[in-house]
Length: 81
Image 1 (cartoon, rainbow, N blue to C red):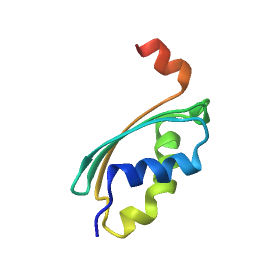
Image 2: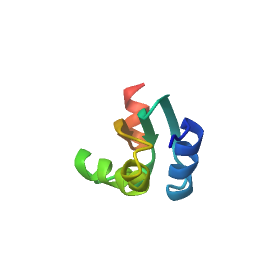
Image 3: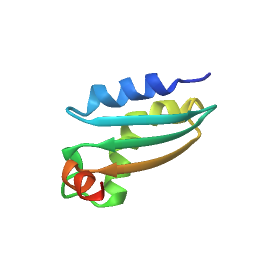
Image 4: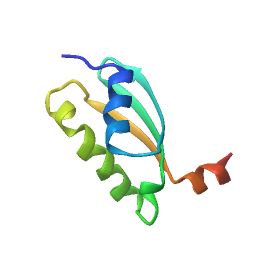
């Protein structure tokens, strides 16, 4: 069972409004970048848990078996540029 970067993008976009998303990788290993204000006030663990909740069924199925994440608020992203 495999999943595409487009499918992962769509799954996350359906759960997080007004997010900038970038998903790369393949073959079960993905890099997920999300810029959204939903992360405001959350530490890095809570931010990751937010994404894991959304994609967990695909991790459980084996479609995703390695994930690295870059998760920022829009303000943090603007400062990082």
